[in-house]
Image (tube, rainbow, N blue to C red; front, side, top):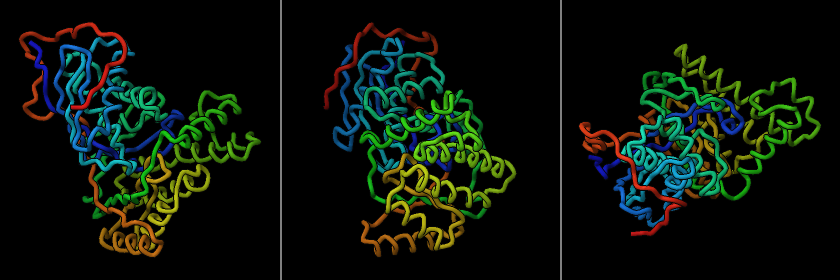
Length: 372
């Protein structure tokens, strides 16, 4: 007999490096946060979705989108009652939306007994965000939430979704990885993110390539449009930076990756133009306080920066002072460690081992939604 309810958690993420490379078929290197979204999910006997969150009705469109994405992929899933709470900061560029999507996707997969691998669940969650919410994101966020492991960064090849767990333990190296939430909230459905994606596609077409993953530095001279050249240059150099960081981490040289983080920020600021004054001030202040490296993380246009530092206190003090001098709202600064990926909470058994899987009743079309 199928157990019709349980609780699942999925983490937010910090991308160490590899920004705006995912939808270009490139490389990314995220870690999962210890901050998570918890979804208590109960299957229904109809196709309705009832959603409740400690943040009000915010997030209901993502819940409906996940179930709609399952159905769009021809998986027969019923409606569900979903109750959510989360400590992943919203609007901070730490993938609170992906954490919600992945917790629900994993819950439905387990409860219905679909047996889908996590790479497929990541694509379903991404489809929910792209098609049903309207944010044209790549596969990075959902892959990080579902595939990361504690104590590691996830090397993700976004072309084929192959992965490698790369040891990443700042504390063991006497270092601190800090997140600086600038409080400048970003919104990936406002068009700017989509513009960057379109510009990359145009650059690839101009080079006769399927994606910028196949482009090299020599190709930049073939792009006559300066805007497209700068967008392509970021993607090409960012992919190379990811691979260089991975080489260092494999060799136990975590403390040496700082300059590559900082170079990534400069590229995102100047060539890709997705930074903002708050992010630039956060990075400059962290470096002035002695951080080994710092960069914006996430889609940009607001959100968070990260800093790799010997002293967390010195960085936090300087960042807060710099924000005060610039008249910005006080940032939230906190240390993060690489956490585990999405999982069912202990005790939330989903299938009776004696009876195996059960097929959900047929449904058609997108699920309806109600708050409760």
